[in-house]
Length: 346
Image (spheres, rainbow, N blue to C red):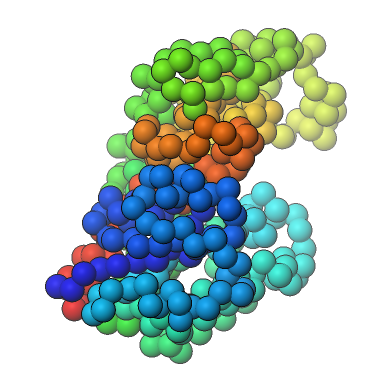
């Protein structure tokens, strides 16, 4: 079979690229307008980082990057904050008018110009309920693609976190289906399996063995809260004197998704761009009195322990990079499914 080559739109630091390459798909380039992603993308992947605003980019230039007679694959994940569950209170009409969703139209334009044999897009689950998405699927079908999409629960694909994502695949060479799950509930990969062996550190400390294994400093009050926190528990486990004022009121009694400890024997909560901050979610370490380290968050996102995010980046920047990334493991599963489809169809 001909060589399979891919380009990754909205590539970030390369989570999807890395996973596809692990599956044997040759990702030759990634495009993103965030120049802070260049180092990690190129350092960890044998691929070119194209720093560009997709709205002004000439996709004919991208088309010329593919080898002659190669099988072309186009993948990507347009920025997803607008339809994230974290913004569910925002009026849906306002969301659909958010200019960021015109970015999906550029994905369609790239497919029209490049005419890849296979396309794939990963995004938040809420996108599937919008007219924006329905139009996107219709446009792809108009370009000759057979399309399939589904909301996937990522523990069923080897990602150790409570995360659901929409995955779309399309093909011009035959019927294609989203990847089949690789794990069942009884064999989900747990937090303990992936980070339990990392060196112990305290809040505000940096491991001598790995500078990215570093945790944010905490106040004495938050240290005491962590000491009284139980895995899978909530702030209801604390002495009342430790409660923030918002949780002392009846209106705050049901807000239990923050200030919690993770459990060794379960998947983690969804890794966000603020996973290193104890008060931003249930990101307390299962045992140590601190929040997740930067390296631990990356590992739970399924980046390998050696992934180099850059030494001169601010913690907040690296946290944003990791939280926004497509988990490499999902990219690997997707890459295997794309190869299987192409072997059967080409």
